[in-house]
Amino acid sequence: MVIPKEIRERMNLKEDSALLVAETKGGVLILKKLDIKEIADRLRVELKGKDVDEIARRVEEESNERVRRGERPKTLRG
Image (cartoon, rainbow, N blue to C red; front, side, top):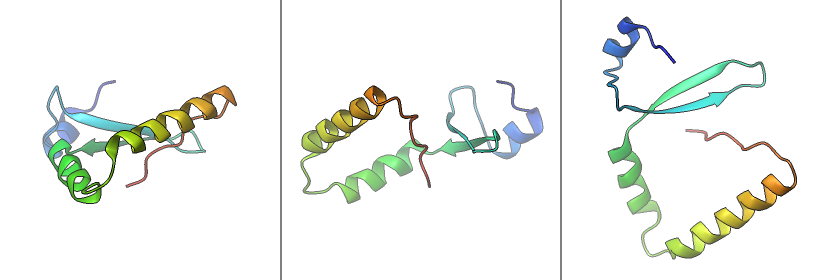
């Protein structure tokens, strides 16, 4: 995917920048720049004191079940 130079410069996008890609019901693609440090800091706060392995196991089970039922993945909202 090619992102125009003006947009890359304005958003400070580099070759290794992480982007979330989501599709709307109308077929429009949305790109969101992800700040890995911000995500890690937020997870550290939100998951403090929780059993992360149990959460991961439940998410994996739920995701696998949805795939078996033929459901499309849900997009992240932020």
